[in-house]
Amino acid sequence: MLCGLIAPDTGSVSIDSSLLSANRTFPDRFGISINGPAYLAGLTALDNLLDLAAIRKRDTPAVCAAALVAVGLDPRSPQRVRAFSFGMKQKLALAQAFMESPQVLLLDEPFNALDERGLLHG
Image 1: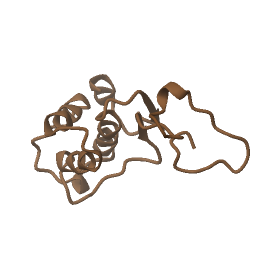
Image 2: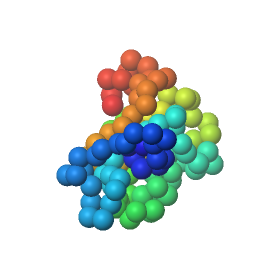
Image 3: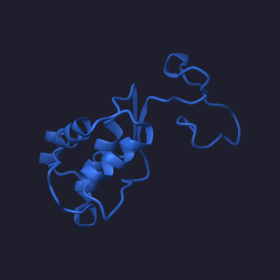
Image 4: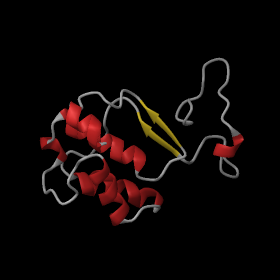
């Protein structure tokens, strides 16, 4: 509801107007990771981020690579996401949420499946 993906059945959701772009009723600058990682299994981590970045044309390949490095994934790795551990997929989900420099992050269990090293790295 906070992201404008569904409408409330009852009641209402209020978003600080400073987080809304002109002519928007839902925020444009939220980073979101809900219901577990979302990815295209046949692609690399970098290719997943590049495909996502292409939708809104906000981020460069360098920004996508930096997001992966920030969470402890190697942007040069040829490994397909289908072969990732759940922790690696979780890191990819965090990179997706961070990559557009959001004003607000909404994360559902962001540390799920991350080991101690992964928690310290990200």
